Image 1 (tube, rainbow, N blue to C red):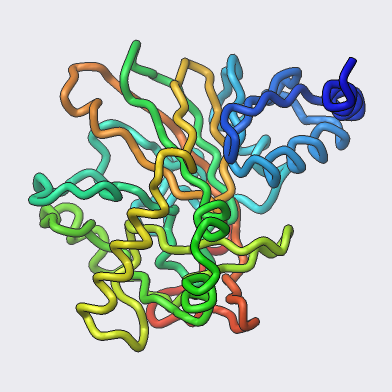
Image 2 (cartoon, helix red, strand yellow):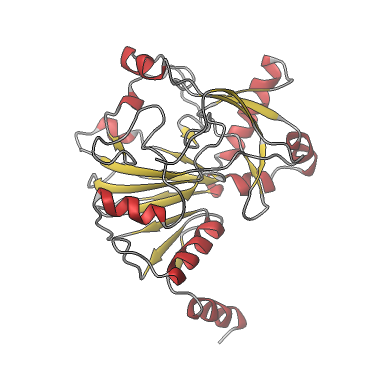
Length: 314
């Protein structure tokens, strides 16, 4: 047996769960657990360790009720309301319904599609974006509707040293609202009218648990870079967004009924599928999010809230 194989076996023997990586940089599947019941502390510890290492972890064959999803989520942090803008379930306010035709999709057809179109981190315009998102597949199409995830840690690490030094000192303005190059429909505009969120975040965020640096530039809500002209800001952001979404930094997850995706919203961008709108298939998912901290940059300075309140526990 090779030393490498021996080390893998030792690692597995010391873990209470089975961890199978799905790509070189990001994503792993977890087996050997029942998420519908309270987890032993050892499994909570090992799941969290795998989550921090692989940034997004996946579980299969985990049918859950809303209550069970909330209880599972609480083992890893305080659960937020379903969505600070769109609200939550009437009976279970911690649950956010991610349906095919939800309010968040009430936009006109995008005029210009770019390689980074649709990529985002959840609720980044808040002063303390969620630490994590936990998404459960309930009604899943027989094919299509995959979700993609990209590592903001690897994106930062693969920038040139000179560019890393430059972006280390930059901050951006994040605002909720319609994505680039689209017009919001009336229902959406009314929804966010009194729920505007605007924050100034560092473009490079220091992960509060691992100390790693993430290229914190989710395209969905980042509007401009502080201190740069509009043309400078646009050019640099588009370059960073194109870099962030390089295929080798990503993992793609094919859903099945009962699948769970649990990602670190501090270091992961994700892309919701667009292909489902070209099909007649139904798609119904449910999400919980965990209360996050205020991002801190390389210089030790925290983000600033320009409009809106922090996200609190439900």
